[in-house]
Image (tube, rainbow, N blue to C red; front, side, top):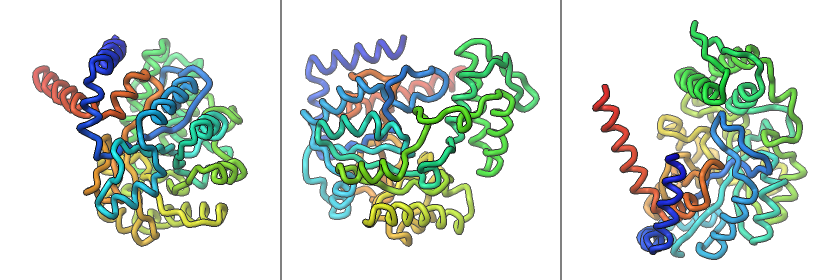
Length: 349
């Protein structure tokens, strides 16, 4: 219901010119769009909708081609290093993780509109029959025939889609409180209970990863690639030596395969607490010049190039949500929504 109301609001804002006014206000900032994948399938409604429907993605790219100045991310980083974003309404397109559907679904559309993009690779997953922790949980929760999940001496019901989504959120919250090794142990425990292992059951679907042959073809077609660690390790939650190795091995693997320098990085998770001054120094020592976060916001000319905010794009949101995001209209509104939510929480606590 709320999503439909927001869609109506953003459509109205566009029709009466508010979107255009917002775009003018943000014209000297850059929107670095954060995608994960593009799908030709309907979402499962349990976990985060990481993959944008193909038809919606095509419409989004048409909007960018008509209304924005789309540049490669490395070009934007160079501008920020010089302290000036040179073109108004600048946008850079990025994809995290390196899902195979960036090749099968997104790449043809990007090529049709002649738009550049950067894909951040978890190099240990390229061409491998592996699956990310969160993806394994979503897949197992969607398919399990179990009626309940045991977690911390509690039974979480799984009889409805809403209950399964709630179970996912509770497991995700539990995982965030653990260190890297214990996260894997808990995820393994949950997946064993649910009796569906993504890496063993699915080949070639939305959760599968690019191969090096596909990456090389995309690079020849104008797509750039950046590092996203070797094993999707959150850098602040492991020791600095391992963090440095994860960064460097990912960077070197891409450079060896593509025969060119890689200077871009995306922090795994990328939320507050997932990066700090130590991780910045690790990136600098690895020869990386630009790094992006999952923190919401537009990039400014005064930002540090190793901690750039992005604008997330979800498969659950409408075209008009996207237009509002790119124009900057959602920035102040999201702050208002958070303030209201905090106020309501204070009133009920």
